[in-house]
Image (cartoon, one colour):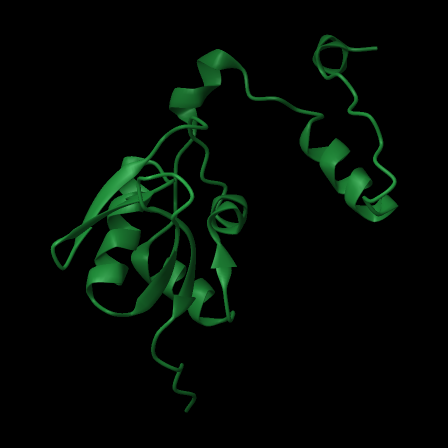
Length: 134
């Protein structure tokens, strides 16, 4: 057993979770990021990549954007975005949050808010204009 696998504690198996989903979760936990490696990770998401990915689907939850573009950050990392006299919070690091905010302000994508807490936080996005195919 390696040191990395000794740190990972298995979760109890829930009968409601399909087996193929459990296998995918265990793969993610195999190689945790070391504390010193966080500064060496380069984020490569661009506004056109975000726009294209969001427009290719009917709805994209925020966790899916993080997974697709390997956006790593703290669990509570949030970016404030001002849209038409309203302030919303996007659960992405500063750079990616600003890119998503530009798309929101430009009307390229819409957003769904979680109004459960008092603060409006974006939980998902969707395309506003259809993709034109040549």
